[in-house]
Length: 165
Image (cartoon, rainbow, N blue to C red; front, side):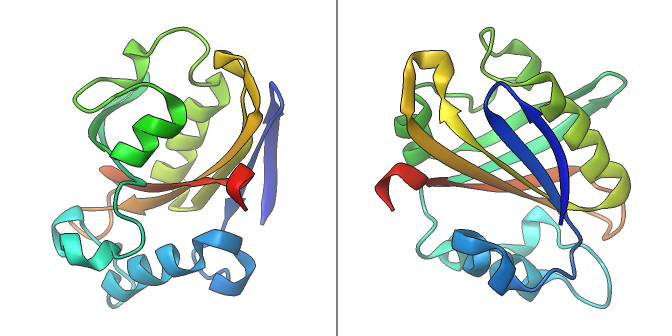
């Protein structure tokens, strides 16, 4: 684990793909699903997954498609229903750059680029302070996906509401 940055009460960490699942807290089973699709050193592709693979994670999944590298931007292909309830906004079909002000920290764009280049896992944790709900703590865990097994073109994320734990 590498502590990457702290921004506006949020912390960001990166993990090597070899990090044991037991060190990834509430995301251990999510990472195990991803690892079950990674074969022979290749990254899994979004098409490798089936809806039933995400038992226990349904509604808490985000899928992003990398649409631009300079500047970095992603389009949200899937923004789960539970994610919408937690964050109180819907992003399916929208670009990250189109989000209302203060919903994404500038460091998040950097971390997408780091995930793209270095194929690392990314954990973001913090309060939903842009809606005045500082008491609501969440964690978002991102995993790289590659249609060709090597070039990151999508990101698979899961969201946990830490205030309910």
